[in-house]
Length: 280
Ligand SMILES: Cc1cc2nc3c(=O)[nH]c(=O)nc-3n(C[C@H](O)[C@H](O)[C@H](O)COP(=O)(O)OP(=O)(O)OC[C@H]3O[C@@H](n4cnc5c(N)ncnc54)[C@H](O)[C@@H]3O)c2cc1C
Ligand code: FES
Image (cartoon, rainbow, N blue to C red; front, side, top):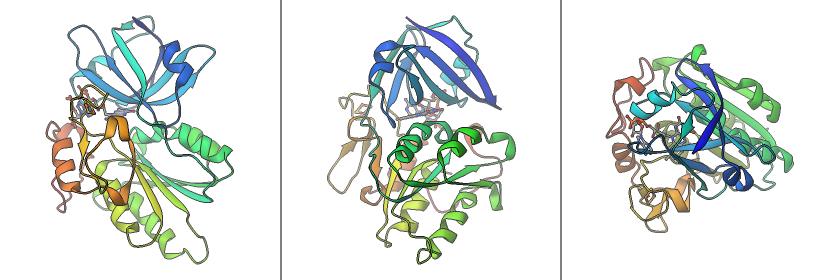
């Protein structure tokens, strides 16, 4: 059993859990995730590790209340236990000295990207972070993102309240490359926003990576649930990712349709309507 050491509500329907899991804390790297099962009748649900303390043996992640399991998790209290907590899973994010790195985050990416940004900063990169949220109430974690970013841009609401709010600052930066070159873009955001970013940078020669979150079941590459059509052949997000070269991902439409098979209006950003993909 894995004890809940702390539970903090960060904003409306967003929570941070700290779990006692020394075996995961010992090996966790930026960009990796865990799969937990609440109790013996529970589903397997994956979450990105947002922090860890190797000495204390604890692992943090932030979750959004979107469905049955996460709604139950919102009621967990300090001292409660989880039946299973497996990890760290997936490949760590690619970290090196790239130069100027632009990080685009929304949803749980506001927390999940923090260890990556921190490590990129430690490597000597200059970091511009673009946060996107539907409204001010949905913003959280600014302080942590600010701490490791040289420049923090916030896109809230805007036309339709959709991905355009994060895309606009990025598009402005892409027009200004002569003055401020960009060496890499990495995004942990809604699949829709990540697709827009991939298209915006496709012909610009800027390496762009995206952190994919397709529906997962076993998390070990065996079940095939998280498969992605990729330029190098079929890839499984749980073992080959979750970070991928955005320009090598094929069939975004299929991916979005599969990812959203179980989605309903409750997880969509208020007022957001996109006509260009199969997600909405
Ligand atoms: C690698 C990875 C990392 C993730 N990291 C985070 C995170 O840090 N914080 C966070 O809030 N969410 C994260 N998610 C998404 C999270 O797993 C789902 O929101 C969660 O499983 C929903 O469970 P539910 O029962 O509450 O909702 P459901 O009612 O089951 O579904 C609601 C939505 O969640 C999606 N979903 C359901 N089950 C899964 C699953 N097993 N895998 C992926 N998506 C699913 C559905 O497509 C649907 O859009 C991550 C997903 C993956 C694959
Ligand atoms: S979750 Fe089963 S192959 Fe990735």
